[in-house]
Length: 200
Image (cartoon, rainbow, N blue to C red; front, side, top):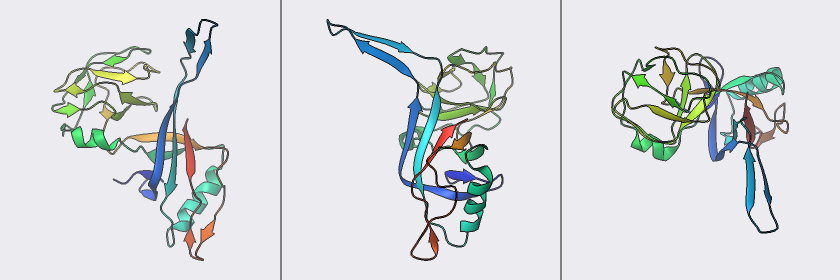
């Protein structure tokens, strides 16, 4: 599957380089007179994605309609871009993946079953019972626990499925500087420039 804006059935606008995926994890910091650094990291975290999309011609009407209807107040779905290195290191072909036992909110490790091979560090994953997207902080090999970042935002019941391939959907808002309309280049190609998405 291509990475990009998903309308419920297909990707209607594919992401194109340059693209950045940023972890926004608010941290307060200060330096003392002795130059010792003091930091305080908040518990809140969200992913922010900035990417160009391929210029569109015949499919431009679908993106235009989505931009206008969603605006800045409604959520939309995107296919989360996986790290290229993580994709190359992925050897797990398992399907029907599920958790093993209940895992409580704020945990950073989730026991799993029904997997084999390696799911590498840097892979985005999503549990079926809530919408937050997580990243693996270390490799999971042949069913070893998933070490995740950030900590779980909600309890994960036993036998909850999870996704970790090109099927991880992120619920987002358009960022406030997005053009809510259409912008054309060369007469027939709609190109709104870089779009920014913030995780809902």
